[in-house]
Each structure stands twice: as structure tokens, then as C-alpha cells.
Length: 168
View 1 (spheres, rainbow, N blue to C red):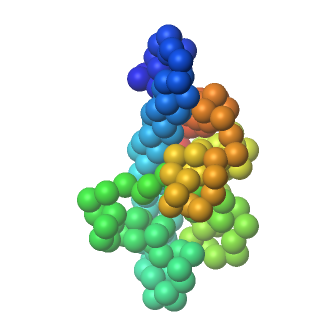
View 2 (cartoon, one colour):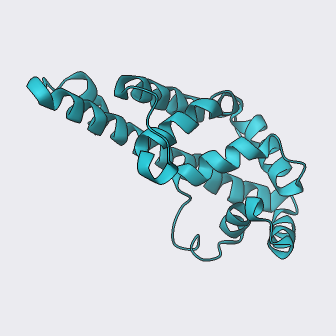
């Protein structure tokens, strides 16, 4: 809400226009992070664990010591630090980008589940990279390629794709 107010209704004057637009876009990015954590990844962990051998796949992934799978596996098994914290925006982007391309069973399970429940989200994964880069360019080594207005629009599209979920 704050991002929408800042982006659309606050009259910025002079040199502060860019600052307000950036802060608004960052608020939108935080909303995307929270929506992905609560509505996609937490639901996947809860729902898929009831219907598949997800915990066993996660344990196998940890046993193989695959750096690609470690974050997702620890999240599913609620191992430190994911027993107290959600995935970050960057982690969700990393996982969603790889899950459709990987032959690893854990990623395939996630991809199938997201395709069934959030099909429009998979179409928007490419824009998620821009949101991640915009939110924390120093950590990701990329200068933002998009304007705050573009990022806000991408975030609204991502949130809409999450909100239009099919029933599990």
C-alpha cells in the first residue's frame, strides 16, 4: 500500500522525485517477497509435503551437497536458517529460475506444483530478476536496468500472478 501511495499520489518536488520513486518501487519489491514467501513457497512446503515424498527428496538433496538445491531443501525441511526466516527475494528468484530447467527431482516437484497452482507466475519469472537487481544492486553486482516505474509495474504484475492462483 505504501508503495502505491508513494508512486502515484505523493507530489515529489525537485531533486527528491527520484528518491520517492525508488522508495516506492522498493516497497513494491518487499510486497512481492512477502507474497512469494507466504503464498507460494510456504504453501508448497505444506501442501506438497502432504501429497508427495517431498521431505525425502529434500533430504537426498542435502546428502548430495548440491549448492543449487541446498536452499530449497533446507527451506522444505525447516532447517536453519529457514526454521525462523522465510526465503529472501533473491533466493526465490534463484529457485524459480532453476526449477523449470533442472533435471533434479526436487526442482521438478516445485516446478510442477507452481505450474499447477500459479501458472501465470512462471511466465513472469524473468521480470523477477530485474526486481531483485533493482532492490539490492550492490549485493547482486548489477546496476538496475529498469526505472522505478517499471519495477513497480513488474511487481504489480507478479503480485497479480500470485493472487490469481488455482486451488491446490
